[in-house]
Length: 168
DNA sequence: GCCAACGTTGGC
DNA sequence: GCCAACGTTGGC
Image: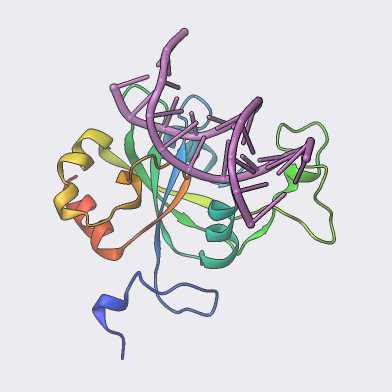
């Protein structure tokens, strides 16, 4: 029996529960419209261990993703996407010409992993960081709102997911 | 293992 | 462009 309050709280590759995430992108680099155009994108270039661990260990095919625009005039959630494959080594770490090349990584023991992200839809409007801050009381311990938060991949609970979508 | 220096993130 | 917050690096 699946308890409602367990949804979104389980992790691990054997888990059967849906998880939710927020992934940041600078729209000048790669926006929700870019994802809409290409439909699916390898989430390459993450070079933070915690963010990597979420992708490598915790994400499962079908997990929901808030696509967040950072470093822009109105930062906020601009669309929905989903995890579309199991994690695999980020190929850019092996490419000497890439900004994300990592000389310390080997094919036998890759350091950086990623998932592919597929476009679902744009939100009718951007749900801004300002608005999310105003709703903080309804978003208990939302990772995005923690002080000094800089992680580019964050977990979202089922309750947070549902509430944020209700703002749309 | 400590911690100063440095680099990056991302809101403003 | 500024800068607070945080992660990483490397000397010791």
